[in-house]
Length: 88
Image (cartoon, one colour):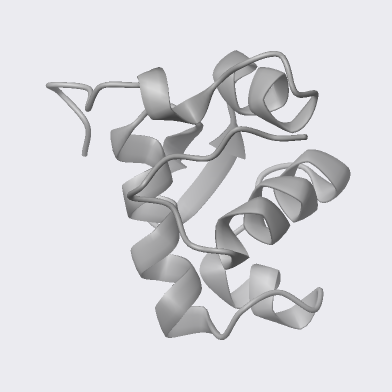
């Protein structure tokens, strides 16, 4: 079972899964692939990047990190993550 953090919401797993499956995505593409609506996906991608599960590849484009992969593979407890100081 994945160990999520208090700051996470249920749609975060779906966002991470979609980006792992399809590669780097924008919030609009996340919505098109059946994820949460663009506005929500945008906010959640920024939050996931803040904790290092996603990386901001370019403005509005996100990719999954090794930490994000480890979380999805149940190898990382997200509650142990701290915000990254230089997140965008």
